[in-house]
Image (cartoon, rainbow, N blue to C red; front, side, top):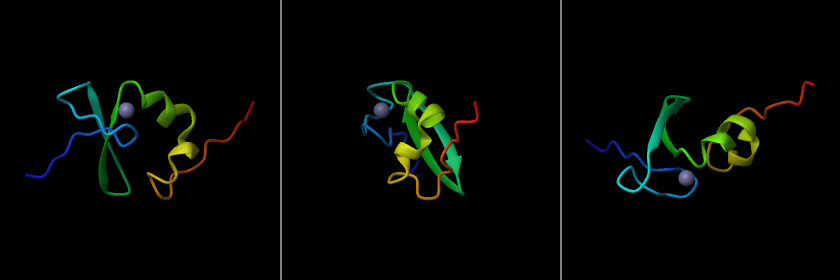
Length: 60
Ligand SMILES: [Zn+2]
C-alpha cells in the first residue's frame, strides 16, 4: 500500500500533524489542519499543487 498521508503544502506526515485526506480528480491528497483553510478559502493558491483546481470566486 502506498497510501501516503502527507500535507501537499508543507509535506508534514500524519506522524507529525493531523492530516485530512481528500480526493480531487481521482487523485488522493492529504493536507494538514494548518493548511486546510488555504484549500477552503484560497484554493487558487494551490493550483501548482492541484492542477485544475477551480479558483473560488468572490461572490459577495
Ligand atoms: Zn501543511
